[in-house]
Image 1 (cartoon, rainbow, N blue to C red):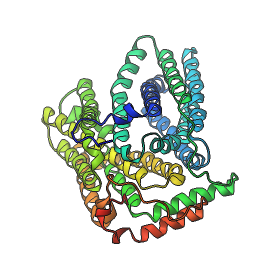
Image 2 (image 1 turned 90 degrees about the vertical axis):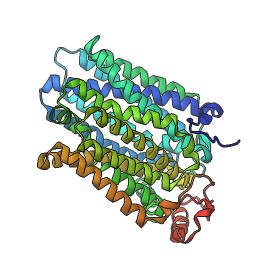
Image 3 (image 1 turned 120 degrees about the vertical axis):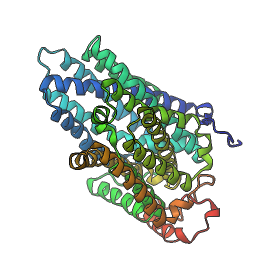
Length: 449
């Protein structure tokens, strides 16, 4: 089928793949519910403890199990049916949300239940996340990865707008228990949708099921990433975009000190990047023909826009710059995900997706902490400006150091593995051999390295 040539979002994956439609619907329902719950948990934690510190700690209670979960989940996704893994890790989240609802109905809700439920949510999300990422190429084909990535990112941004707003209304109206109950229903929607997706076994299931073999499998994924110049570049440019460049935690301070506004201005600051991301998704049809240069440009747009945001005190300009930052983030996220899946053999996609998710979890956490520390030392405005300049500088350094990133393209199919051996060692050795020649290859070949 002829590739779309306009700017409009490419809806081909939704039109052509029944299974992707089901996964998309389920993902959207689960995301809206999860973001509603994030608001409800923050409100409940503050009601129970009166301590902002506990709000930060409960976020940490989720992040650490996510890291553990994705490392294990990456191995599982390369060995077992990815559809069954998604079901096995998302359906129990219905019970976790139900437990939060019951706890909210108690005269004195238990703090430990909130922490335990949050940790279990992180673990299960981590275990199933790599399976979902690794399943998408099988559902849409490698030539539609950018379109599928844009659709998934757009649904996440739509959920980021809708979920917190609905969650706030439910908490203010029927109460916390109702919000948690709707979240449970969202996970039921995801599970019901995935149930009707066809089986998704990995193309080459990895042998060995013991603990030692699992560690060996994870190490195989690490060796593949380390020897693959494109994927190393993708990880580094993503870190450049996240570390020192996460201003969300400073929005309340900036609204007060920089723009002289109250909660209404804080809401606008949070909404502006999501609006820009939705615009980026709606005009993302060109990304299927793009590659490394577009990715680098999108990250630079993110960094430069945030630099300008930190420097201005004029609210309309600040909101415009945040929207541009959101647009750049959407495009870079779409291309990073597509290039990652395009350049990874199917038998390694679960583990590489797991390592990617670890980086995607750790970098924003470090970014929020780093920006907070900078703000303590230099002030909120200076912290945002310095973070944006750091992003721009680091992105240019990564782009210069990794020609494979600059020359990566999505317009050609990835080269087949050099060996059909399904063992980890054979896959990793083939990857190492390929990576050694990556910089010497002509970019006109369209190789996604």
